[in-house]
Image (cartoon, rainbow, N blue to C red; front, side, top):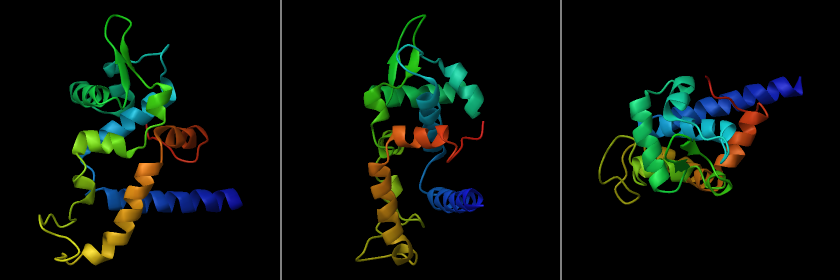
Length: 166
C-alpha cells in the first residue's frame, strides 16, 4: 500500500514538473535528455551505440538526434568515437555531470530562466504577471537540475522509480 502511494505521489510530482518544464525546455532539450538517459542505461566505453539505434527506441528522428548528440559530444556531456566500431556512450565522467549541462548545451542557459510569458525584460524589478508566482519554484528547479546528475536519474530509472516511455 505504501509503495502504491509512493508511486502515485511520484507520478503526480513528475506530472507537475513536466507541466512546469514544458514551456521552459525546447523539444530539442527534451529529446537530448531522453537520449542521454537512454545512453546512461545502455552504453559504456565497450558498448558504443549508433544514432539509428538510439533514435528508434526513444522515437526521435535519427538525423535530428545526430545533431543533438554531436553538440553534446563537442561540449563533453557525452562521449563518442568515430569509425566502424564507433558510436556514442557515457563515460563515468559524463555520468557524473549535472542534468542542467544537457539543457545548457542544447538551449543555452537563458531559456530555463526566461519569462514564462516570453517577455524580454521580465525581472524582479519589472515582473510579468506570472513572475512572483513562479520565481521561487523556478530557482528551486534550477538548483535541482544543477545538483541532480545523469547517473542519479539513470539509477532511478533502473530501480523503477521513474520511467522512459519507449
